[in-house]
Image (cartoon, rainbow, N blue to C red; front, side):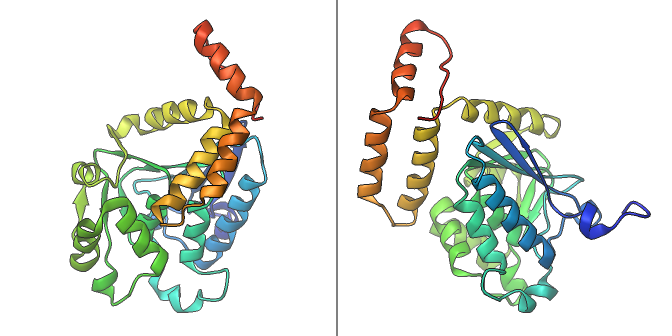
Length: 259
């Protein structure tokens, strides 16, 4: 910690919005970016702010230091179960975030932070990435939505392997089981994330954000057929669909306006 600086102000998550891309950066590297109760409130507020910014299409969750995040302070779990303040509710807010989300994972991602990463749409890791879920070792039964994310993202057998044995996975195994969607050299994580941001930010907003929303709902067995049909019709009637077809024929990058 830097002398003379207030930890709660300087080391809490930091939100930055730049055009179509936003980032939330965890800044507590001396404890592997462990999350504290006040961080849950801050993260919920920042996600609300991003959701309220219609021009933001991509949100990246990242951190400073050697490790992505060591999860939540287990000593605070009993004190953070009030409505709207639990760790699981914060992670659910990440999953339901309007923009497409990316987790940039360097080093370790442990405990509840693994669920934060799984709540993101994409997870980019480095060769030194590693993860484990020590809930059973600590005597903690994980919350329902986190169990669902593990099963829907990784499959039942892998979820059991990670939850019930507390096995630690290294980077290649994380990629093989689907925990990481992309694996880069550690020095190239930022470049890989920036390339993915650029691809996503260049898509038509109505189609991009609508399909992100409905794919997540389908994965949870909560398909909204009427909502999907409405979203399809909205894109068919959009100026962006016309622009997309014209740009395809003219072999140029489309200029979408989000309607």
